[in-house]
Image (cartoon, rainbow, N blue to C red; front, side, top):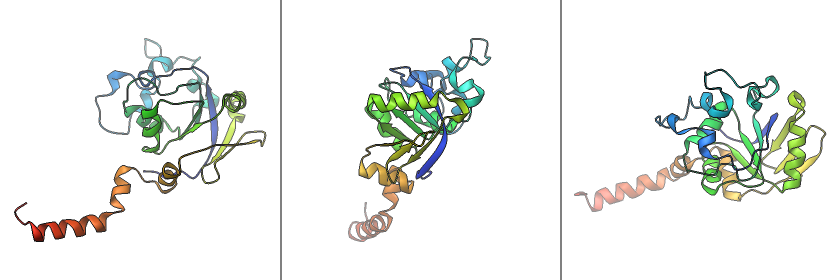
Length: 201
């Protein structure tokens, strides 16, 4: 998993509340078990018209936000089903950080396991960042995970809280498999002992 330390990029405003995982990545795109290739279908029903053309009014189709790496979202982001394809699609599109007042629990946990930093902030701080994000290409925001700070385009700084274990995993690029592999020597020693003591297993 890609490490997350510091991120500076354009922030896109998406003030809708209750954006669920089906809005993030509709069910027809869940046939794959690959983590790549889903970015093109992110927010599919909002990004594209019925004839397949882009909806010019959707924020990520606008020139200033096509390469956004940070999403400023409305309350209860990632609600709905627990599909891990949702963070896969967000990461594959290039978004590494989502900021909101609240997240669905499973989506929130899945973000950390896929190299995305979800940040919970009070409404007044999200409102300020949402206003900053509306500056278009000038909406450059910096996120520093080590110091747990967000710096807006005007230089103002906001602090955020994050679980120490989840922070450690992101800083070191450790998903569940990576955490397990850190114990590889102990696992191997156990398996060797087990094979010697119980060779019939």
